[in-house]
Amino acid sequence: MMRNTFGSNTEAKTPFYLRITDALKPIYSSLGVDYPQMRAILKMKMTVDSRREAVIQGTGSSDQEEGKEKNQFFSSLWVYTLLSSFFILLFVYDNWVFQYTTYFSFVFIMIFSTMLANFSTILLDVKDSVLIGTKPVSSQTIGAAKATHIGIYLVSFTLAIGLPIILFTFYFNGFLAGILLLLLTFLASLWSLGLTIVMYATVLRKFDGERLKNIIAYSQIILSIGIVFGYYIMGQLFEVIDPETLLVEMNLQLGHIVLFPMWFVAPFGLLQEGFSVVYGVYTLLLVIGTIVIGVLYYTQNNKIEQNLQKMNSSQAKESTRSLIEKAFAKLLCFDSIEKAYFHFSWQITKEEREFKTRIYPSLASALVFPAVILFQELSGDRDSNTFLLGILPYFSVMLVPMLAVSIQFSTQYKGRWVFHLSPVRVRPPFLRAVTKVILIKILIPVYVAISVAVAFSTGPTYIWHHVNGLLFMMLLMYFETQRTAVTLPFSRKYGASEANMGCMATLIFFVPVFVIAGGLILIQSLYPFTIGVLLVLLVALNFWWMNRGFTSHPKRAKKTNTVAS
Image 1 (cartoon, rainbow, N blue to C red):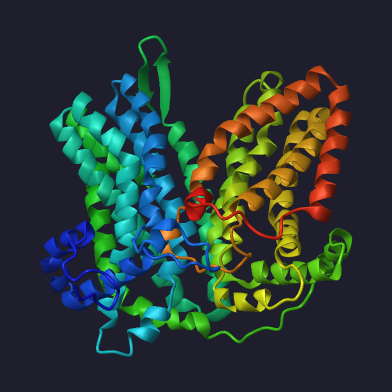
Image 2 (cartoon, one colour):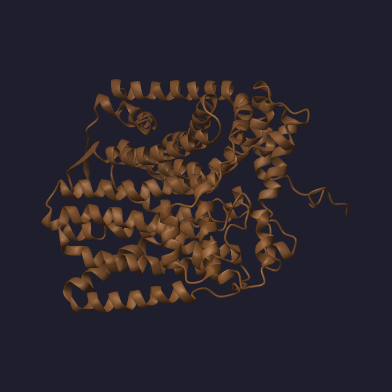
C-alpha cells in the first residue's frame, strides 16, 4: 500500500476534526479563506502534533516505535473531566443563575489560563509566514489555519471540562437548558480565542521588537490577575440565605456589568425566572459582544500575520551577567562545569519569550490567589483563621510541576547536540544548575513574598514553620525534576500536543499540598522540638542534592512522556 508524504495510509479514515471543518466550509469561504489550502495546512499541523520527536535516540514511546500516532494533549483531557465532575454538587441548589455563574467562572479561568500559558507561543509563531507565506497562500488563509488549529484544542479542552455539567444539566434542568449550556460553553471557548487574538493584534499594531515581547508578557500577567480577582468578585454576588434549604440570593449591581461571564448566565435566568431588565440587558450584551468579537477578528486576522514579523525586528542585545547571578553561582555551584550550566540556564530563562509566556500567568496566579484568601480571612475573625493563613505559602508548591516540565523546552532545542559532545557527564551538573536557577529566580521569591505577607498579618507564629516549608519545597523541586527530566534541559521543542504536560501533576498536587502543609504545621505546633529536627533533616537533604543530586542517565520507562505529563 502506497504511503503519502506524512507516512500515513492514503485510505486512512478522515479525522473527526476535519469532518467538522468540512461542515463549516461555507463559513470559511464567506470569510475569504481558501478552504482547500487551509484544510491542507491544518491537516499537516495536526499530523506534526501527533508525532512527538524522540529527543534522544531510544527514548521515544512504544507508540512511536510501532509507527502509531498519538496526540498527548487529547490523552490528558480525562483529568479535566474528572476535576470538573466535582461541580456536579452545584445541582443541590435550585438557583440556575448560581449554578452557571460558578460554572462559567470556572470555564473562563481554565480556558484563559490554558490559552495564555500554553498557546501564546503558537499564536505568536512567525514560521507559517516564512514557510507558507512565500507561496501563493493569503495571510487570511494562514491566520484561519492557525486559529482553527488552536480552536480544535480549545474546543476539545472546553468539552472535557464542561461535559459533566452539560450532561447533568440535561438530566436536572431539562433539554432546553442542556442545549443552551452546550452552545454557550462552546461560545465561551471561541470568545477566549477571539479575545486573545484581538488583544495581540491590537498590541502588534503599536509596538515591535523586544518592547512588544515585554508588553505581551505583562499583559498576560495582568489578565491572569484580573481572572483571579474576577472570580473573587463573582463569589460576592451571592449570599446563602438559608443553609438548611440551600436558598441563595443574588446581589447583582450595575457595576457587575463588566463581569462578562455573567452575560453567559443571563439566558438561564430568563429561562428559569422569566424576563427581567437585568437578564435582558446582559443577554443583549452577550449578543453584541459576540458580534463585535467576530467583526474585530475578521478585520484584524489578516493583519496579525504581517505584524507578527515585528517580533524579530529588535536588535540582539549582548547578554550580561548581573551581580545577583554571579553571587548565586559562586554560592550554590561547587564546580566549574555546574557553574557554566548555571549561567547558561539563568540567561536562557531570562531571554526566552516562550519560557516567560508559559510561566508568567501561572506565576501571577500563584501570587494573587493567596492574596485574595489573605484578604478574605483578615476581614473575618483573625484568631480562628490563623491556621489557614499559616499554610498559604505552601500554595507556591503548585508551581513545581509546571516549572519542572517547562525547563525541558526551548526555541533553540536543535542546539542540544553540543551537550552530547561534552567529554564529561552532562546531565547531573546541568540538572542541578537549572533546578537552582528556577528556585532562585521563581520559587523562592514567590514563597518568601507570601510568607512575609502572612508574617505581617499573624506575627512570628509560623516563621520557623515557613522556613522548613521552604526547604521542603526545594527538596520537592529536586524530586519532581528528577521524575520528569527524561531529556537534558531546554532540549525539546514545545508543541501544541504537549500543552497539558505538567497540568496533571499540578492537579494531583492539590491533595498533598493541603495534607503535607497542614501536617507539618500541626506537628511543629504540637511538638515544638520537631521544628529543629525537621530543620536539620531538610538542610542535610538539600545539601546532598545540591552536591550529588541527579543521576547520569534517565530511566527509560516505556511510557516516558505519558508519565511526565
